[in-house]
Amino acid sequence: MIALPISLTKALPTDRLRDLALLGALLLWLVYTRMFFVLQAAHLAAPPCPFYYLTGHPCPFCGGTRSFAFMWRGDLADAVRLFPLGPLLFAGTFAGVAGLAAGAVTGRTWTPRLSSMQWRLLAIGAVSAISISWALKVFVLGN
Image (cartoon, rainbow, N blue to C red; front, side, top):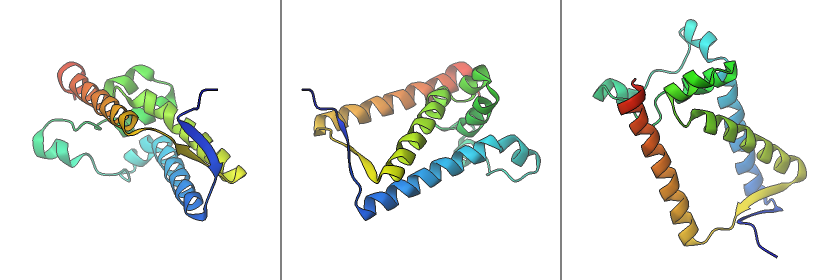
């Protein structure tokens, strides 16, 4: 039998608190991005990226909020144009909400079981994906 790199274990009180905090943060983020255009029109949206104002270039995550907002509208083209990783992160957010909610209901928590080499490869993959997304944003897709 092959062991999966993630396991579902009984949640300790600290794990449960962490999972509920993450669930709350993800849900708050989804609500904010769902209401983004309404909040922006009322001048109640979060301020724009300070990195962009200082350098004139987008940061690696610039366009993420608007990308999620366009995903709520079903506009994949604008979502990718604003933040190439946006649609993938949008779907991942829903997967995270579902996993955390299921864990909260069952009293379980998700525990990654990765070796140090697997953690390094995961970090390299994440940094590479963000770097490629940023390069696309700066050199191909524009601000």
